Structures are given as C-alpha cells and as structure tokens.
Amino acid sequence: MPKPKVKIFKRQWFFFGLVVILFVIMLGLNARTSEYFRLTGQKKEMETRIEGLESTQVALQTQIAFADSDKAVEEWARTYERKILPGDHPIIPHPAKDVTPEVNYLETSAPVDQQNWQIWWELFFK
Image (tube, rainbow, N blue to C red; front, side, top):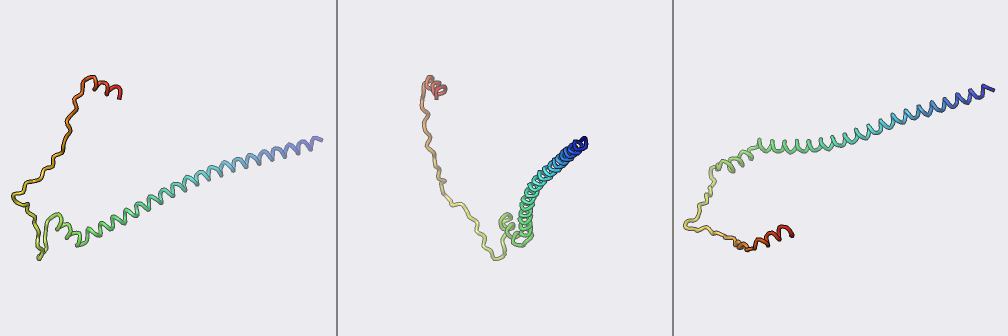
C-alpha cells in the first residue's frame, strides 16, 4: 500500500514543478513583451525625429543652393548694397519741399475728481 501514496506524491510534485516552470516562462514573456512595446515606441519617436531632420536638411540644402547662385548675389547687391546694372535707371525719392507733416492728436479724457472716501470704497469693496 505505501507505493500508491508515493506515486500520487510524485505526481503532485511533478505538477507543482510544471506550474512553477510555466510561471517563470510567463514572467519572462511578460518582461519581453513590455521591452518590445517600449522599444517600438522609441523606434516610432526616432522615425519621426529622423523625418524632421531630413526635411530640415532638404530646406538647408535648398538655401545653400540658392546662396551659391548668381541670382542670390544679384539680389543681395541690389537690396543691401544699392548696386545697379548698366542700363538701369535708379529712382531716388526726394521729400517734397514746403510740406508740413500732418500731426494727429489723440484726445485724452480728463481725470475724474473723486473724494478720498470714494477711492477707499472702490479699493476695498469693488
């Protein structure tokens, strides 16, 4: 009779060991899935950042290409250095003589005289 009890006892330990092994495997799986989701989020963030940097790079390359062009040099010379090409007719505006500048005065309201008690009343109760 002692043999069947030992057999049942071995089965219980085997089942308990199997449950412990499955529990450890599930903990590892949980850790791996949380790591996966964290890394996936970082990947998406980095992809977005890379797209922004690539668009910045394209914009800067466009600006560099324009700055190297003859059109940019001509625009700079005409705008900032006031240079003209042969055949251009410069227009130099002169102020009109005997012109009085128009002055627009803003109407200001006169301060309202108040008694001291009215000022204190407004300070504490309004």
